Structures are given as structure tokens and as C-alpha cells.
Amino acid sequence: MNQKEFPEAIEMEKQLLSAMFMKEGLVVPDVAAIIDADDLYRPEHRLVFQAILRLFAKKQPIDYLAVEEELRKTGDFGKIEHRYLLSFIDATFTTARAEYHAGIIKEKANFRKIIELGDIIIDEAHRGEKSPADISFFAQQYFNNITRSVAPSKKASFPDFFANNFNPAIEEMKAYADRLSGFDNLDAAQFFSPGLYVIGATPAAGKTTFCWQLLEQLAQRGESCIFCSYEMSQLELFSKSLARELFKRVPSTDLTAADIRRGAHSIQLDNIINDFSNSKLNLSILELQDESIDELLSLLKPFCYDKAKAPVICLDYLQIVPSSKDSTKLGVDDSVRKLKKFQRDTNTTFIVISSFNRDNYTKPVSFESFKESGNIEYTADVVWALQLFVINSINSFNISDARQKIDKAKKQQPRQIQLKCLKNRQGTNYDCFFNYFSAHDCFTPCEKFGDDDEPSDNSSSCYIKVN
Image (cartoon, rainbow, N blue to C red; front, top):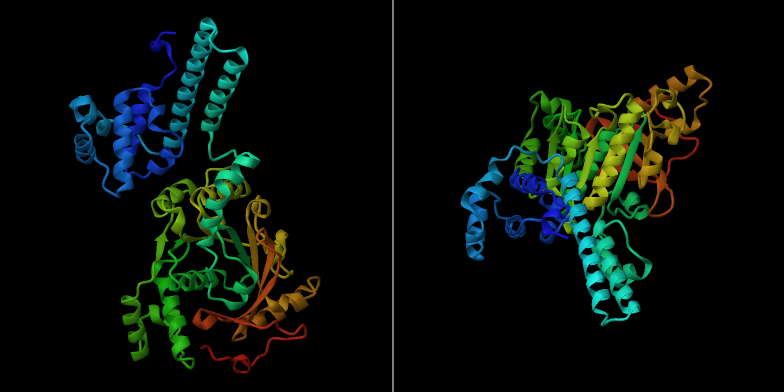
């Protein structure tokens, strides 16, 4: 067959290379996971593709001048017309569909390989130098290589996995074996490995405060952490850290995060601000408003190139993420599915905060508590729920009595909080208990509360010192 008749997507190749120049090489890792240089039809495209990959591996900027210099170093610059190389940066193409287009280019390349295989079989059969069995064996091996290249990350045979992938996968997981959340009771129950974690809570249980403190404690242990906030501002979250640290150093303090935001200060607080200013914590806040789940994940991708040091990311919160779907449930389903795919592709640890149904505010937590829960219980690796411990003793049929007990529990300092693990793919389910000093945005682990514990009207009787 004439080469001109071969399946190809030359214009798509050009547009894809153009996309790889954009946004500091944002799509380069995703594209490189799908196609190789040999999958591109035009030789010039293969050279540019290889130059981009070399620049990306060296963490150098990906622009026209850098690619030109890289091609000069390898002696390949003369093989590409200057005007043609410039056309890559002039092309009007976005990064949004880069992976999809890379898949089409891969498909065209595999069609060409199948055609080439047919030509080889015909030539060998005409020559008659090999037996039909030998030709068939060669063809089968060749075809197996093509099918494996269609989706190398999607399929692994039993022997291939243990021969080639098992040990590297174990070494990758070892990097997380010593990860600690900073909550002793949670660390004793949960191997905090990469995965999708969903946490919901009843009102006043402090889900945002809990997750923010969790990320801060992980960052203190050397983890890279990102808090994606659709609800709270940077000032609100960082003032929580100040209030909590002040409470740890000066348990008698009356200053709260709200006081700090209004300008209240003290010598101790000034010292903490100075300490925080000079800290090495790799903890960032991504302040969001109208970004869709796809736009959010695009913003996060540059932080997740290195799977060996993937960050811990928290999203606050699931139901507030804008969606074009017809219902909240469909929007949540779509978001959870995309979050799980992103988590698996990047090896991140993704914690997603979810709201609860109002009908479940006075009932012990369960999967039914999650608002528009959709695929949460099926997709998440770990599902946590926070609740006021007093809810375990509430008769949900007596609404008046339930509200009185909950209001009383909310006034308690510290509040008695139960973290219930409803699902755990990494082990068994469990319960953890915390004293929540809501006025100081601070959770401290504690032993299980007694089943007959009642909230006290005297907050000082529940006071425990924070070390």
C-alpha cells in the first residue's frame, strides 16, 4: 500500500504539539503517557516532540527559542523549516482536548502498524522461507505489542504484573508508609496512603477546621499540601492556624480567629506570626469561586507531576463546585468520578469535604447522611463522618428533645466529636474521638466518651490542657 494512503492525523499532530507549548507544558505528562515520538506521522513532529520531552525532563521552559536551541544541540534543527517550527506557537489551539487528540493520534499510529504487519505477513508468505507456524507466531507477537500500546496503563496480565510492575508499585507505596496525620488515634487506625477520602459532618462538628488542621499537621511532617477553598478566604483559614497555635501556647487565651481578623493581637500572637513567616511549611490555599471541576483539576495538575512526592489535597466543599449538569446529584456524581480519576492518575491523597442531608442532622451518621451522595459510597476509598457524640443518645422521633440536646452540646467547650469511618478500602472501619475547642479551632484526640456522657452547661468542667 502506498504510504500516502496510510491513516494519519497530521493537522491534529501539529495542534497537539502547539498545546504542549502552552501553559508551561501543562499537558506534557498526560500526552507523553499516551503517545511516543514514533506514533507521530511526520518526522519533523517527532523531532519537536522529543525536544519538548527533553526540556520538560530538565524542568526548563518550553517555548520556541528553547526548542530551537535543543534541536541545534542534537543537530536536528536543519531538518525543520524555520517557518514551520514557528507555526506551532502561532496555532490557535487549547490544552483542553489534548489527551483526547493524543488518543486519536495513537489510534492512527496503531492502524499503520496493523497495515505494516499485513505487508510483512504477505511478503513472508510469498518468499516461503519460513513455515506458516513461524509466520503466525511472529504475527501474534507483533499484534500483541500493538494492542498493549493502545492503553498500557489500563491492562496488565497476571504474570506481567508480578514480573514487571509489582516491585516498583511496592517501592512507590513505601514512600507513604511513615506518613502521619498528627492525630494519634487516627494514625493508629488508618494507613494514610494515596486515595480518595470523603468526609462529611453534622453542623457544628467542624469539618473544615478538622481538615485544615489535618493538612497543617501533615505539612509540619514534610508533606506538600494544598487546600482548595470555595467557601473560606485565605485570611479566614490562616487565622484559624493562628488561633489554634496561640491556644496551644497559651491555653488561657480568649483570642479567637474572629478576634484576630478584627485586628486583635498580643505579644504571643506577634511571636507566632513571626514564627509562621519563617516556617518551611509547604501548605498552600487555592482560593476558588466559579471554577468547574475540570478547571480546578487543570489548576492542580502542575503540582502533581512527581508521583513519588504527590501532594495531599483537600477540597472544601463538594456540593458548592459549579456544574453544568441538570441536577446537584448528577453534578456531584460527575465531580466524584473525575476526582477519583485525577487521584489515581497523579497518586495524590485527595480529601473531599461533603455536606449532609438536613433530614439526617439529628440522626447518627451513615451513608444516607451525605447530601446528594451519588457515587460517594462506591467511588471513595475512605468515607469519614464527623458528628457530635451526643447524637448517639438522641431519640430522633422527639424533635424538641433532640434540638435541646444538640444546642447544649454545641455550647460545650470542648465539644465532644466522634469521627466514624463508614468505609475503608485499606483496612477495617473504626471510630475516633476528639475534643473540639471550637472557639480556638483546635481538635485534640481523646479516649472514647462514656455512653451516658451528657454535655455540661459549665464549659470549664470539660477543659483539658493542650500540649
